[in-house]
Image (cartoon, rainbow, N blue to C red; front, side, top):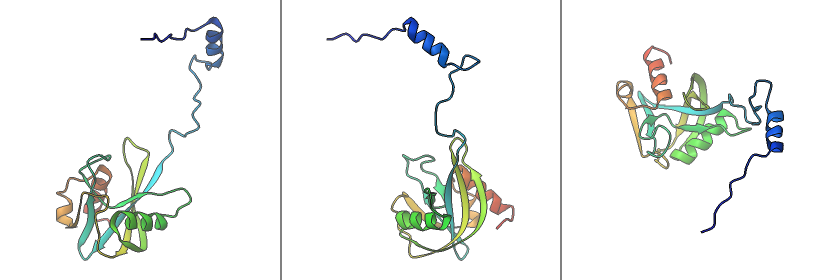
Length: 163
């Protein structure tokens, strides 16, 4: 079995390291990614009568097993309407007719995602292509579901009498 030789820090490497450190001895942040950048996510609030459409997230995903309003990330250069159309077609086989008002915007703690809840009019019969389950729930039922955190905040917003 061959031995792996570990590199050692030479005096030249040490001088380079010291030179590359900032005024306070810390290495300057070299990442080109903004640590505070946010990723917009459209959540479609699809309602038929007094019932809301929700999907259960797959176990392997963030917030797996919890219920959510369907939607997904807004891609670069895409409008919120285009994102809702793409996501609901991919995930549920639904055709988005229109995207209404922004009802609430919620930062998903511990992630870069900002979930934007929009009134959404969609046609078709939903098919669970990515969710493990789908359901139409009346408002009282929504309050008893195990919801993803941002979705729970949206339901609380609705409970306070907000549209």
